Length: 359
Image (cartoon, rainbow, N blue to C red; front, top):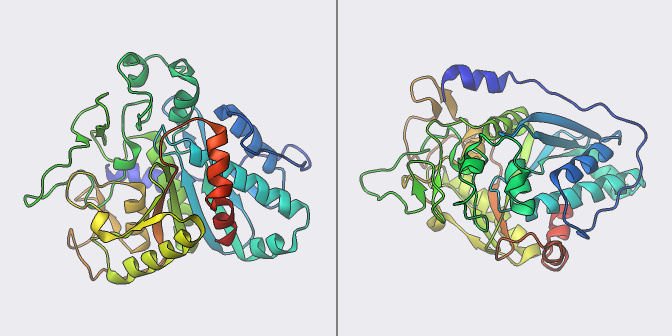
């Protein structure tokens, strides 16, 4: 990613959606599959609340709006996002349900929620990869631009497991982080990494250039907009019922903070916590959105020489903290599915609803 592109992301500027009228109660409870356009309608509806701002933070490869939601008046930001991988649609609906309920409770005068939203601000991207969301749920004909890579390769895509965007890029390997795309002489390139676009099962391509994808740049803009005030970042994925907590190239203070909060998250969900031994650095698998967030809050700067976030060393356990906040990945469910009844069970029976409110 060149310096001009990074500066362009920094200078993106907000694009708030106008309110369309007075707020009215919304009810969504995993009772049906939602098109992305249905999710947009819910977001536009909650935007009518005085406590909500809805920011169009970018466009997908297939020209769908990507939304950043801001709920609350407080200075302390709790940052949530989901669906960076196409097949991981469940978390989009978990966030949609939570945001919907949160605003309903605020508008109904719930004293605890009103008080909380005067102290905190919930910031969320319900779907980073809306094209992938739509294709996984409703099929390849959801793609409108037939010149896109995914449509041209529609007969060979593994739709049950695909993670990339409509350009064939794994967005969660496309962020301009210190170790993105690098692997060291002491380690082998991990098997899931591909050096070119591929439809091969469980093999993914991080892009010819870091920060190349519109969805990546939209997420970067929203992170850069809010990270200085953040107190927590929770990145939602699907498959495994595990929590990934820690970054081996960052300080023990940061990792201890993250691990401590992961244990609290596990208390509500029962999910297994995976610490540093499960994290990969230098195997070609870096460049994730949690890498980007972790490095930004730890004071890494974009370098015009390395064309990525950088520090003096590739691995440095003595990074000077700028903002010591927990940054973690929450993997829900045990498989990829588009079944709303499975989402409903996970949300209520595995403590996700309670977890979100506890934050």
